[in-house]
Image 1 (cartoon, one colour):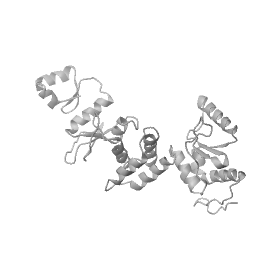
Image 2: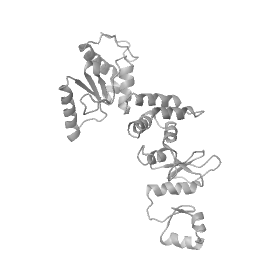
Image 3: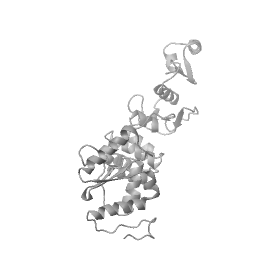
Image 4: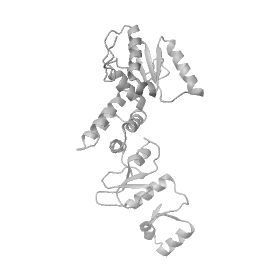
Length: 289
């Protein structure tokens, strides 16, 4: 990608630029040219930075992709400073605001990207983002919280702290978060160990070690092929360790969390649990036995 200003500084006239555009170059925006027929995603990103001008920085999902937190987005968000207004649109989204850029192409750093995305993403997408950052990219939750504390305002501060706490507890998917919130916490059940490996080979979603119970959660409607047999192998291996595996999907967890809680309580009581669970608002009129 080249801007007209760059080309003119190299001693190439507007007349030559016009000829190159007819013969070889592609004009992707006024004063911005691609030397390829079909720009790559990175090429579109550089084009947006050239349009935005000096100090422009890639942000939001575009920065998330460059920071290895998410797939490449179709639209590229670019911070262009407080006083610049850019009207060029798709595939760019220009944002008036100041950000510090790192790397090449310049983008917001990983922590600032997380904070910016947390302001606009729904809770499930935010959970996926934080799971990737903490679970696979080595981001420390305390670093995110410290950076959040430095911001005078954040529109979703409470949600970010809440989701980050769930990720710190081992939650790695929206389904696991709903299980933690609507089944375990809502009914006062014992706290499971998450992302641990009872057999030393397979990590599990929730392990109630004291009661020999494993809860596996899967958002897929069904398993096929190798994944299905991997589940069999895992369950059989846990059975050899005298562990009982209970499996739940979206329908169980979202629509029948109280029934899931009752099944878990029944298993816990077989292994000596004597406490009385809490009644959540959905099951308040149905007393626990």
